[in-house]
Image (cartoon, rainbow, N blue to C red; front, side, top):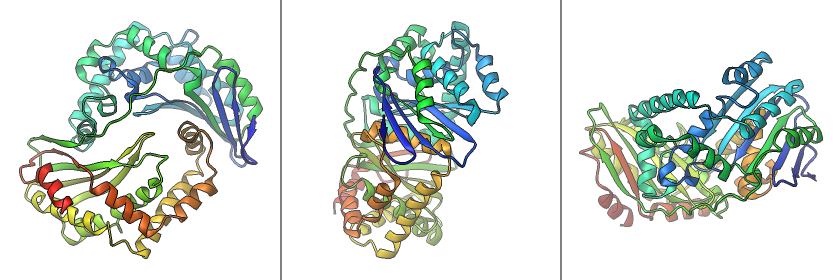
Length: 424
């Protein structure tokens, strides 16, 4: 066991499984989960959607519990259970009262090691996922991000949709899910994390008991993400055109990672941000506009989303590109301090939640190989300078862009024109 602070402990078990906890004595609950360092980018082309399908099936019955029993046992004690799939991670987690930590650990361990993938349940869940895909396709401000991702990273795992495609989900076989789980749900690829009113040693004992049957073989290597950029357009009969403009950006471990996060905040992170003020408040071109930074283990994406009317679309991009040019050499101390305060407040407020702390512990161990103390993260945010934010902006916005647009997009400039403006 490694003592990382007065409240944080980390143990690496002989199987390769990592267990990390944070004790929060003033709460009455425990959030705990298994965080698998595997997601959409780990899938082969023929099994795209397997990570998400597997996440759904994990709650559909084990050798000891039916799907109904899983839900009933958690809800009988007032607990909550859920899961999510992302491009680099799949998570299964519960929140329970402190006295029910053993039950929560048992259930999460059970669904990760003894799921049965009942064929009837699989057929029902296949229909649920197809409905989910249909709903996403009918929601342009949702599906636009899948098209943006696939255009930025074409014909490679990093660009594939998390939900998979209708054709692949319709043909997904039971043995495909079981094979994927055997390959990727290895002990060395999982962090079991917990935060709340708990004792580390007791939690480790529970994890050793309930996760004992995880595979111990090393998972296959991850294919690197290779940014390409380009353009996607889909004409739809909509009242608005939905646009995402993006660029390659910094991964978690890169020197300009924190400057890029502050850049996203001051450019499009709130009502005081440059884009909100210039595009919405002064010109009334949009209802919604924001910027985002999506870091990965190797590289990342920086993007700007806007939803605008057909007639306003012609003005929106030139105004946005002008702001991208300005921020490369015109950041001021007041707006940097405001962005810094927003990022720090978001971080520190999240620490009041056992669920957020639990997820943060697992993410940091998987990305950095350690738990980064909050004081260290705050110090890194505080240390960001105006020059670093401007350097991040110059590096990002002088790269090849990616443009995705859905709706009446005839007035949206094409990506070659955007490249010309940014290079000027």
